[in-house]
Length: 191
Image 1 (spheres, rainbow, N blue to C red):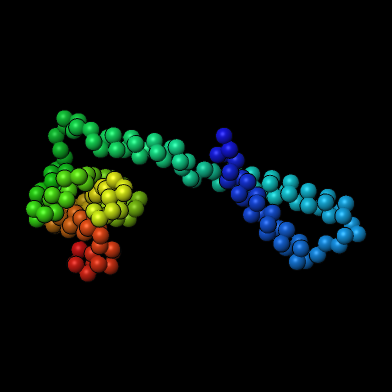
Image 2 (cartoon, rainbow, N blue to C red):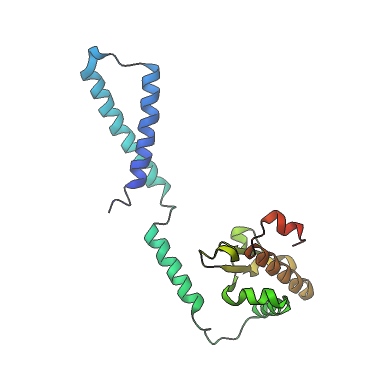
């Protein structure tokens, strides 16, 4: 119930603190004009809350609420565990499948419980692939490897052999993240 009002109250409290601090430093209050001081504070509160409401309303809602986030995660997990839709895999999905098959046996075993997802949203994140999770050692969150078809095809699609090589490199890069390697360590491996 208070969810839509929280950003407004947070912005208002910040504005009140800043305005109050500035007023206190510029013109410290005296006790002789208490009625005027109360009127100024009430007016400043009203102005700050109105400004905070307008700021939040104009900025829009960027943050996803906790219940919405939980719903999206639950839906993604349900879809991730659902059986295939019966359609034939695309050429790119075949390339990803072949890259998985070329991984050493130990690494393929790691991917038994880690979905590898093909996504067309690489331009949005500026990447060829992504690892989501908290590594094989922790296992607190669901793990997922995303291979971005659009950016890989954009940069390497002119040569099928080069595309297959880069898909495999991207997959190995994300598997290394799953194993706990940071970005510097993965790059040190040549991935």
